[in-house]
Amino acid sequence: MPERTTAVRALHDIGLAAWFGGSLAEAVTAADPALGADPDPAVPGLNAGWGSWAPVCAIAIGAHLLGGVMLLPVNRDRAAGRRGVAAQTIGKFVLTGAALAVTGYSRSLGRKLTAVGNGAVVEGVVPARSAPGETGRLRRQLDTCQWLIPLLTGGICALAALVDEQQRPAGRLNGMFGKPARWLHATR
Image 1 (spheres, rainbow, N blue to C red):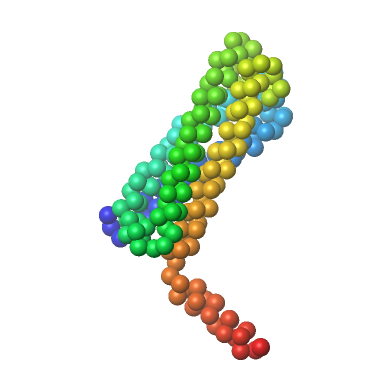
Image 2: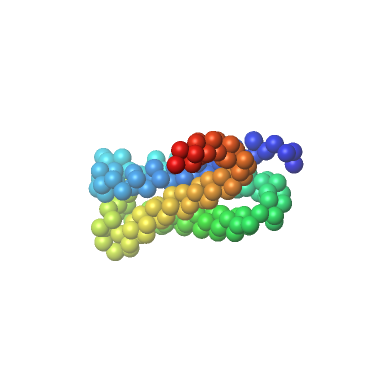
């Protein structure tokens, strides 16, 4: 792989950004009682809108994973040679696996929620969290998953920021802050 990997890194980062942003928007929207707590067909539901987001989310996740796989050989030496990098890489793998699992489970819960309704759940309308029986239980599980996804993908973003920070040459920081620090030290 060439030394410059800007396109691959962009694929990786933009995929993660879309996955995080879409899941956060979904969680916030689902938490709004005005949008989905009332199973009235006149109220625009969440399933229809988020159902159309699912293919975009799948592409974003695929882009993130493809970019990550393509970056593995590039970062192999750095992971082996620098303290803490391997642990961070493993942490990103664990968080990514967990986010993938929760994303898949969330999709499965959404499908079950629609199927369990047997007419009580109108396509495109999300039932209330307080709905009785299986429907309410599935909705509460789905709500939990919808908040776990941005939490996990946000964790991946945070680890990526830490890794990026560690890739910066120490000399740059020293150069930027060295003179002001020396001036402050000299005035004491």
